[in-house]
Image (tube, rainbow, N blue to C red):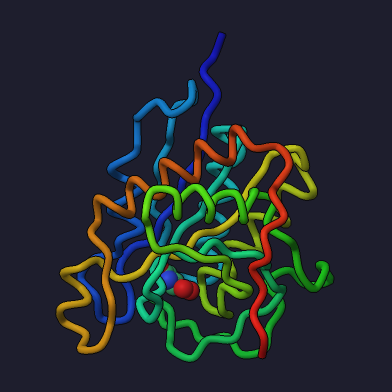
Length: 217
Ligand code: PCA
């Protein structure tokens, strides 16, 4: 029998950085077997539009049983398990190909938002059990990460609704953080372990746990 595939995506560097921890982590896990599944690690361009063309191609080619997209959120100190993808592109900086969409839909006529279908609270709890700093995040922003998150959820909702998927933002690596005064980084090895835990939890936990995790505004 063919081995089921877990697709992990990361992004190329952007915003003046020379590396992106998400690309490093998914490349490190590429080819590994986790919980009986083969991991495919794919690095996407930080570019509106083409990132989704490449992602949809991988979804068709690989027919994964689980998809976790990842990206760098340099301002954050913890692993952020995203809850909600919104149908909005609103870029503060140009993407790596110079595009800077403002107030545009990711998918014209698509729903306003999609919930992650990963067991997000269980993933955070499993990371805490291993002493890895993590939390649920209510928004992946409105740049290319949210674009890919929304496009991923939309593609699967329409073509393969039983496939679980979501998005995880990673902090700067320790080396990157050293170049950004005030920023907290995380060792790359810890982030790789965190993704392994996220995959294992997503494959094992069918019903997410209800742990209070909201935030007051
Ligand atoms: N982070 C950006 C895009 C690519 C990445 O790694 C974001 O959060 O949108």
